[in-house]
Image (cartoon, rainbow, N blue to C red; front, side, top):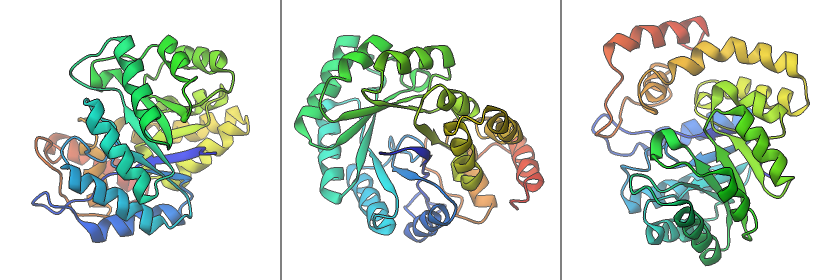
Length: 291
């Protein structure tokens, strides 16, 4: 079972925007050494929207090969075209991914029935575990709990990443599912609360920077150690906040560059972190002894 701290891995790039395979390998090693429990390759934090299909598949292939079974690899294979999502999901299965993460179709704003049919079609077409991903702040569509409950009856849909940050809503979903599929937080600042309520882990941006501490946070929450988890989360809150001063993954890629874990590349239409935020991110990294 996939559980714990799951990093939403960035996709390293050279300054010209081309893929940086050497840095990708070294970042994967960084996570294997620092307690990350699973990796999401080419999720939305991995700039899936701007990688072409061949690049997308090659990154998944590289991550699976580099991890070599040490931890689980979840491939981001969502798209706002059902046929494209099927092709990416099939490729991920062929390359040996353990599961796929499928963001709700963005921009075209499907109905709840459309969301249901989209995910049902993918699950029925490709035999690999699949995790739904609801992030209405980025997709402009909100997968309601009722739709998730319908999809939980579809074979090989095994979980959902809930990035709403709404703990009451997430808790209600966990209770209604009654263990039928797993719930994962997708909101670093509130993740420990959802895990205390029964979520299985956190698909995390912050884990790119502090993998060991995010793994510890998830472990404390899973063990029901609420006070210790809250204290650790409080110590991480300034980092959580500063990794979203501009659109993700702009700040986290800047931070990783300053930490010398990758180059400064990011792909248009995203740009390097604005100078007015760079000093505060630098300060946070310095305080945390990461520079």
